[in-house]
Image 1 (cartoon, helix red, strand yellow):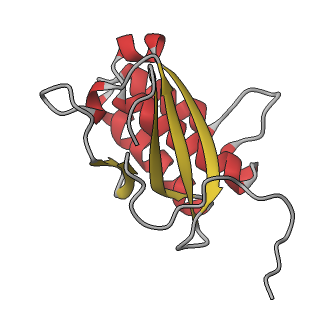
Image 2 (cartoon, rainbow, N blue to C red):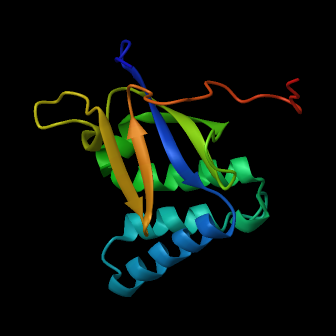
Length: 159
């Protein structure tokens, strides 16, 4: 998918939910906390795992909320501090077409494309994979494969 103005949309697949997602975030936080050299990433992971009194902790959230929190943390860690303040992201969680324990998402960037999704020539990359403690998130701009483009409401029965 090509950029329209300054809004660019990518598809993300392989977003985990449940104990697998929570475990990966906790393990990443533990590893970063040992070095204590990346305060921004540590803060992002802590925020994803334990929210204030007005929000449920990660393990108590609905699976779509977990997927959104996981993806948001993964993306924020990849962004530079300048990009965190200048780019706006919007995440639309979609059911996965392949696995029940993962979700897919449409990831919108308003205000430009982050550096980690550009090649050296400032062209959008076709595909990119980011790793959150041994969980690979696949990001692509061409939507190769089957992708449900919106979340459905209620139960759907096909006959």
